[in-house]
Length: 418
Image (tube, rainbow, N blue to C red; front, top):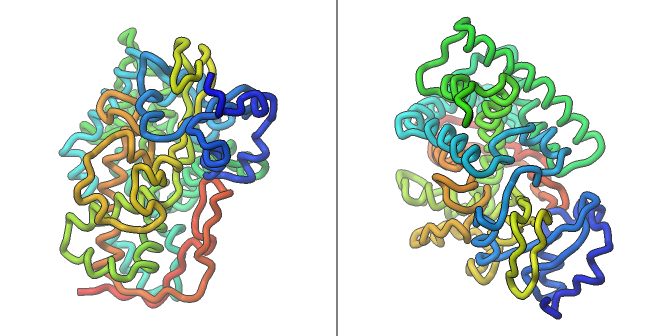
């Protein structure tokens, strides 16, 4: 056992209150305090090992050492992910479900997604010209909900957009919360699953026929390892796992607007420069807080950094810390899109939505969707409209998970640029 890690003084302390108080910096604060990239504590009433850094990410995504089933606390399953979804699977079941998700991310489907995103932006910004002020996060959430449902093959009546986008946003907002936000997330989960179960039932009884190759089509007819259709409930959970992350992109879009406002030199570089747009999007995803950490359990006993990992122990990987690790990123708290010009695509150093192999491992299958929608959205905000940013509270708290500029980023006097 590594003597520099004060395991004995931490293992009996329940640190959940400090996690909620410190938020995104919880793991990094202790790594810096103890001069290590691994420590043990107690969270959620159990012993937990927290790890950070590139090497930590490499072992964390080794399927011979870790499994995901049962790793996510129930209170997160009942809000953010849903129960029995792909995030909690391992082995053959996970690989088969991952193939299903990756088939939805086909080049043709991503091209369709780009077209839908452009049309939704075009239609929405025409309305902005007639409004006194716009709260970008609220508008983006509704836009992302419309994009997600249209792309996934889910009917979304105009009068339901506001409620559906609010519910899907509350699923995300609840994951790092207790109290009223968690209760709102649980209620939103029940409403959303009921809605999508009905969609699955309609598809399976041919009352609704989504376009071929859409998420609703693929998931509704997907078979498990036994050759049986997924249960209606699990199919609903997985279809929500397609549309919920798209609605969550509203957070990144809001932070992207904040980045443009606070770094005005970037806006000119965005014009007619797809390479720079991509770098800008990646830097927004790296710098601004989104996922704080991810969890898995130890599959078999092993030793890393002179510390023994016991079977079934919960391990948390420090996502926010890795994206701000000074050993990996020069000036990690500086907004610098150009750092991605020569990035080596290392899946263990850039982990905004998790790390690992994007095709077969546990890296988020929707990452490509996030990037594509963000690119189109940033182009519209940077190239297609002009607007004023009035005085407002643009601060965001790292104590709050997930976080957002307090004002939601207000803009006024929107004009469409030719």
